[in-house]
Each structure stands twice: as C-alpha cells, then as structure tokens.
Length: 602
Image (cartoon, rainbow, N blue to C red; front, side, top):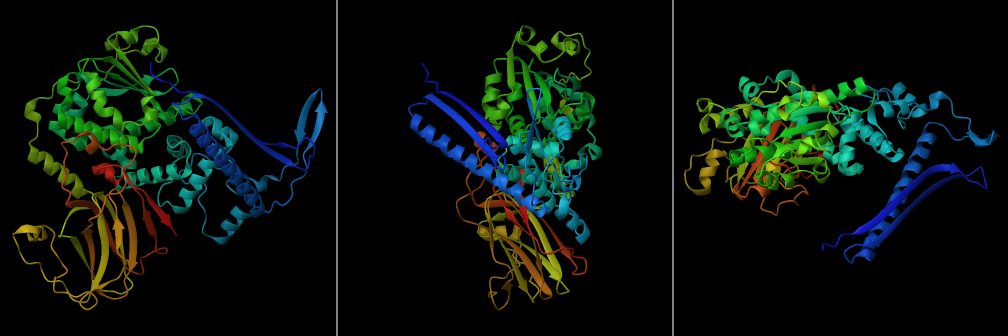
C-alpha cells in the first residue's frame, strides 16, 4: 500500500478587537493548529517548517499593522477616540467616532490609470494630507474582485501602487493584477516579478492591440475547429475546441507557428473581454472561462513532432501571461493515444491548473458527474448528443497544395521579426556582436532595450574618436563568424588609447531583459558590444522548458541570441531622469524568452 500523509490543519485570524479588560487597548489575535498523524517519517521536520511559516506570518501581520499606522500618521490622524459599547436587546453594538470622510478615500474603479501619483505639489499635498490609497471599496470588491481577505487586499493595493510608481504605460486593471497574485499565492515579490515579465512581453509584441489589428487568415476560419459557445452554469464564458477534428499538421505546414500562436493569443484576449462582459451581466466577479476539448478523432497524426513543438511553445506562453484564466477544462472522448500526449504536455502546465482538468473517456461524459453538471443541457452541442446547434467549424484536412515550403515559412518568420522594432542578433564564442552609433552632439542620450533569449552575454559600451574601419573579409574558423558579425573594434586598437569604456561591463543571463541609457560626454563613435560569456547558466526555473521536453531540439553551446532596440535622443528631447532596470531570471524560450521582467528604480 502506498504511504499517504495524513495532515490536518486550521488557521484563524482575528484582525482586531477591543481588549476585554482595557478598552484603551486594541487586541490583535492570530491562532493556528496543525495535527500531523503521518508524514513519511518526517513529522518532526514538517512541524518545524509549519512553525517557521507561522512565525513568518505573524511577523508579516505586524508589518502590515505598522504600515497602516504610519499611513495614518502621514494623513495627520494622531488620535482616534476610544471605542464604546452599548447593549441593546441583548446585542452588543460597538460604536466609534470615525475620522471625517476626507481622511480616507476609496480607490476609483474602472480606470486604467487608477490612483496615479500627480507630479505637481498641490496634488501631492492632497494625497499625503488625507487620502492615502489604503483601502478598496467593499462594494467594488464584491462586485468585481470577489472575496478577499484583508491581507490579500493589502497585497493588491501594494502591488498596484508599485506599478503606478514604476511602470511606464497602461496600468493593468485590478482583475488582471489579482490573477498574478493568486497564481503566486499572494507572494508579493514573486507576483511582482511574474507580472513584470508579462507586461514586458505585452509591450514588446503589442498584445494589447491584437484584437483590433490582427485579422485571422481565411485558412484559420475554415479549418480551425474552435469557437466561443454561450457560458457554463457558473457564468463563465465557454470555449469549445474540437481538437480531434483539427488537422494540426496541415495548419502548421500551411500557416506556420507564428500564425497559430497569434490565434491562441487572440482567443485568450477575447476570453478576458468576455469575462468582463459576463461580470457586468451576472453582477458578480467572473475572472476565468471554461474550455471544452473534444478529442474524438485524435490519432497518431496529431503527435507530429513539429506540431507538438508548436503546442508546447504556445502552452509556455499562455502559462506565462494568462495565469488563473482557466476556470475548468473538460476533456471529452479521450482515446488511447491521449496518455502519450498528456505525458508531453503536463510538465509544462502549472499544478494548480492541472487540478482544474476533468477527463472523460468514451461516453462517460453523458452519465452522472458528466457534462450536465457543468453546462446547461439546452446548450450542449449537437455533436455531443445535445440539442444546441453549434456553428464551430468542423475542421478537416488542410489541402496539401496550401502547404508552404520550409524556405517560405522561414522567410515569414523573418518578415515578422523585421516588422518589429526589435532586431535579432547571434553572438558566437570569439565573435561578439557590435553596433555602431555616431554622435555629433555632446549630451545626447543613447537608450537600449534588449532581451537575452539564449545563452549568457556581457554588454559593454565603448567610445572612440576614430571611425572604425570596415571589417576585413575572412573565411576560416572563428574568423568566418566575424564576417557574420562585423568586428568594429580593430584588434590593433589599445583600450585607453584608441578607445575607452564608458560604462561598466554588465553580465546578462539567459532570459533577462535589460533597459538603460547613457548620456554622452563627447561626440564621436559609440560602440555597443554584446560578447559571449563563458560561464554556467543561471538556475533553471521551476517550470520545465520546451527544450527539456523535446530532447531533439539541440542548440549550440557556443552561440547566444539577443533581441535588441536602440534609439538616440537629443539632449533637448530627453525627458525625465536617467533610469536603470535590474534584470531578473526567466524560464521561457524563443518568443516567450522576451517575457522577462525589468524592475525600474528611480
């Protein structure tokens, strides 16, 4: 028999109450209990870990209390009248003279830039004097966010305030921020890093405008067998995907991986929009949707390796940027080949997400505990023996004459990359990538933004009054790589004489995103250099990557890849002070490798 741990626990938190013996005191209480009957022989260790976590929770609670006390002091509230109690018909009612309404303000709702700090002194004085954004309106929470504990509410406020102070661009809505907090169990630091990764990715790939700018190819409209269909019993939008009827190989061969990725992203963006609509319709917070996947017809053709590669990459990106959006996944008519597919896919899916999966083999979905428990009978599609006509395309085989050649698919990938403001570059061992920028006016500002999608690199900035000579053509060994990456710094140049380093070298690990700027002191030629770093890669993330699942995707250990963007601003056009961004680790590859975080410090 398998040894199963038996652990029961309870946790109670009383935020505050008047001390029973002295009404001048406010009593804060917190209690917890843990009963470990069996834990693989590690009962004592588990108890110590639990005590450590409990002590940490008490410390965190104290920090929150002290934080709001300081906020009261900043607001000028130095005295709060004593609580008094009155007994009326056997019921004790606590009364308290609250500060005037100006001393507290609920955070505005339905605004993309809620609570932005003003730069002028009058506005700043107003915020400090009596309106700290330290509380969410109770009706707003119940209507749009759902049940939140005071600690969870505090985490949401703190994270949003941090975004308002540091994030450039559109501030995400509370519902969106809350998804990332829930995905990290309201660990503020982890949620902040997670959210920054996604915001960087959305900005770089203009995801916020995807629904307005991207038009689905006709091929997808005809052969992609998926679509939205009413809602489930909980009011969640319902998306149906007839995966078994879809020719995944034909779609990848005819459209390429990028088109399928955009299709999935548009589905997720549409899902977010439908959640907002259903929240308004049903009058309660709906932050996720239900997905029904019909696997009838799934066979070995669907296990085509490039198609699996595309699927795993898409799952990676969705997991990284749309957490806590899947409320339930119903998998129907799973065939015998399904366990093979599940073995490949499941390592990339978060554990909390896997718990939302319900798998039915054959016609089991028609019995008790099946589809009717989650979807109203009148909207069950006709192809699942229901009475509702469903206009989702039936899919079918993509004609082979529509397939593209490998060269066409490669050129399509390059075209998409060229259209982006970001450019790509490869760095080889012994052949750095160098970018020349000519500055004619001192005090100009060179700005850069780059992502290390593969390998580790060292970033340097050099200045020279001499114009670099065109590189010599060489064709052997490492020198041939120099022809791919023209070397601007001549080997005969002496550091400190012919050129100088104007910024300290920066080591950048795989998956990091780096932004910064440099105010030029002299006119001349500035060289941005990315050099191969021969060191151990940064620690892997908890989520396996595509290359860990597909061993065939071997890559050279002597090659790094970056995506970069640079711009030169005249001194008169530069706004704001110099900014530097600290890079963080990321476990995503390829396009998702750009979903990396950058923390702004001012």
